[in-house]
Image (cartoon, rainbow, N blue to C red; front, side, top):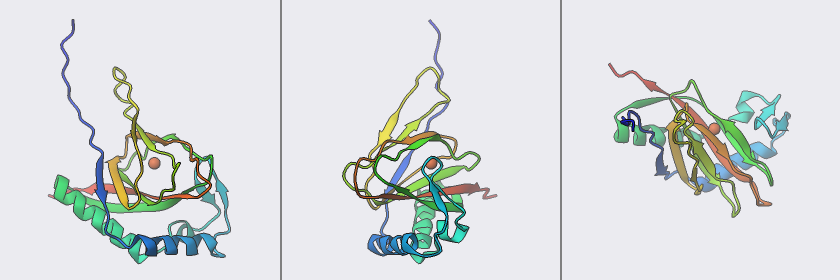
Length: 179
Ligand SMILES: [Fe+2]
């Protein structure tokens, strides 16, 4: 019998935002309906090919506030300061899902749930570095809440089963050295 030494732990952090979610939905709707969204949508990568960065990650004071809130919550929980690198909006239509991926090399990634109709896909974390204990850990999305997790952590999103759009915002952060 071998002796086991547990040397690592993975924390997924969850929180609720106080930002104006209706205002945020309006901002996103305006963007989705705007003439600047000229690119074609690739359901595999979830990227709007050909769209400019600005239209893909629309400027929104509400998103700026959300990022600030996430940074504040993170530092008060972990003592670590986050620098925002980028963010983008995901829209899942019926039957769409997201393949397993991670956000390496970013330190911390996150997702905020804007619109989650009944039948929305769940995010499932796959801590793949631990081959002795393969795991699938699902989190059911909830409107107005966010999850933060290590950027190296593999995850997938299960199939969306509603006629209505599932909308989320993804983020990448770096941990800033504080010395
Ligand atoms: Fe992701």
